[in-house]
Amino acid sequence: MNQELWEQLCEIVGSDHTLTDEPMKNHTTFRIGGPADYFVKPHSKAEIAAVLKACRNANEPYFILGNGSNLLVGDNGYRGLVLQIFKNYCDITQEGERLRIKSGALLSKAAKKALEFGLTGLEFASGIPGTMGGAIYMNAGAYGSEIRDILTEATVLTEDLEIRTIPAAELELGYRTSNVAKNGWIVLEAVLTLKKGSRTEIQARMDELKNRRITKQPLEYPSAGSTFKRPEGYFAGKLIMDSGLAGYTVGGAQVSEKHCGFVINTGNATAKDVTDLMKAVTDTVYEKFQVRLEPEVRLLGEFL
Image 1: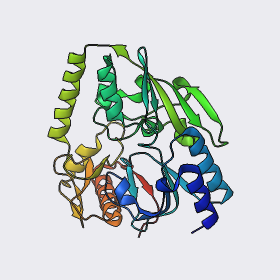
Image 2: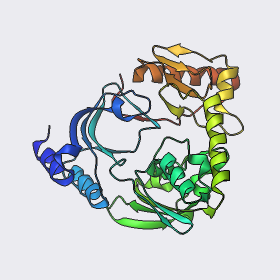
Image 3: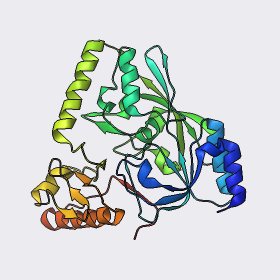
């Protein structure tokens, strides 16, 4: 352990929010992953910038984490620092028909707040398990809607540790991509523009989508959501199902029989189980349909 870096991190975010050898399985929805060398939970923009500056000065690699809902961490963990922007940085405020949301806020929490304020437009996100920062990073979407449909602007921390507010039109938001990802920026805050609506109708729509998710998705198992991106002109889940892979298992990892687009952790899966299964699925689908699936889940750390 770099003692000097450790002391700096404790000074910046507090010793209660600075951990070492922290199991990443505790911080991903897959419930898989070895330890990170350092794990910090900052409270403010200033703390986030200060942690990154300390990492750079110490030549320590770092990774930005939200709720870990789209992430698979290797069994040997991550040699570096994980900076989690989540529960310590998640305020939501109303400004008329706009919501100003810190990047650590869960989308489900933001959708609930919109309901409280009688604002419509965020219902689609009520069941997405990620944070607002992650949603902008990958332009999260569901049921025909995406974050870019309601995003007005985002405040980011640039590679030069400069805080900038950027209009949504300049973020190059596309299918599961943005220039936030391309430029290595860190989302700090978002402003969403919604519309006044009926609380009864908003709640009804959220309930409808919740029932659809419960019916069609394997929510009872740990997973990272959709494992593969949607190939142009196809649906990944259908290609996997039509390849006869429903229920296909490697160790504790399984292609969900309920929704073949999900790889689930049946209880004791390792990261190697998941990556081996993903490779088998990718190869089989390509052999049968000449379509190469690309992972939507992100991989981090050291894999066996």
